Amino acid sequence: MTEIKKTPARKTTVKPADSTEVKVEKRILKETDEITVMNNTTGRYGYRSPNGFAFDLEEYGQTIDVPLKELRVMASGKSRTHLTSAWIIILDEDAVKALNLTNLYNHVYTEEQVVELLKKPEHLPDVFVKMPEAMQLTVLQTAKRLVNNGGLRDLRVVQIIKDLADVDILE
Image (tube, rainbow, N blue to C red):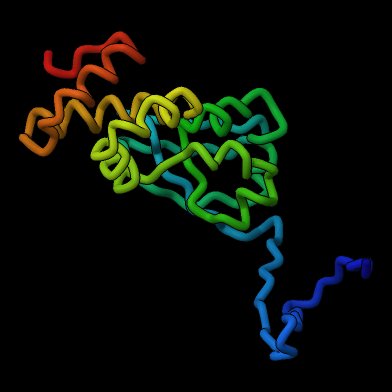
């Protein structure tokens, strides 16, 4: 097995079995890089860092760019719950990896993915229980909104949500 050394190089050459060279761009994040995050709560979200950095997001889906350094502060301090409960969602896959949140993000979905999940009631129970708290609330709010506007008519989904979360989205 060949040992791979981490270097600040931007390009890596990979030789597949057929000896064709493929160049893969490897992004190296700096602490000053701006990382887009999204409000995943059903209302207002605010953050205040111990070092004075602060931001407010007024509604679900609103985004803001936050320096990677501040996300590291959040991830390592008392505010880690903001990330682990998915109150905000990091929209940069490289930043998710850099903050060691990859396993958690296997259970975080975009709004479009939530809508698709609600079309597959057979998958909903297994997926829902693995989601962070705020993501579960997003699923409930999205399902309720879809029921109210006629976009969700599958009573199996309504019953599954009632069984899992003890919430009647028809009310």
